[in-house]
Length: 127
Image 1 (cartoon, helix red, strand yellow):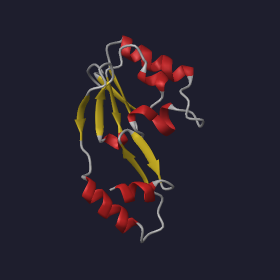
Image 2 (tube, one colour):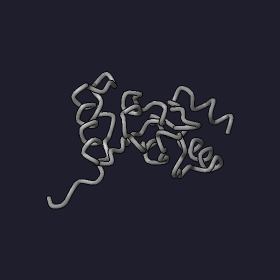
Image 3 (tube, one colour):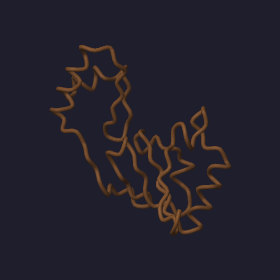
Image 4 (cartoon, one colour):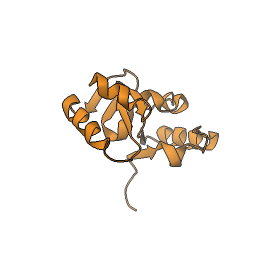
């Protein structure tokens, strides 16, 4: 590999977090060292932003988090959404209706909250 590393996107579940969804000290140290070296470290998670571990979001020098399976990019310090790509409500409702015909596990992110299949009927009614 040639050239300086400029950015590291770090997956959370199954990569940076342990099996109890905690960040091992060794991983926090590695992320801190990368930031100190001038590398842009960007946690990437399928979770909603507020479900990204606080220990990660509070890393000194952390600038951005990619959350909700890439649907949102947030500037950490200001909390400002830099980019988002959301599914329109009507399309989401149609999709949930279609999924009712299949036996699949459903998890959705709405208003920074992760909603699992036990709450889908409630969300569907609200849509």
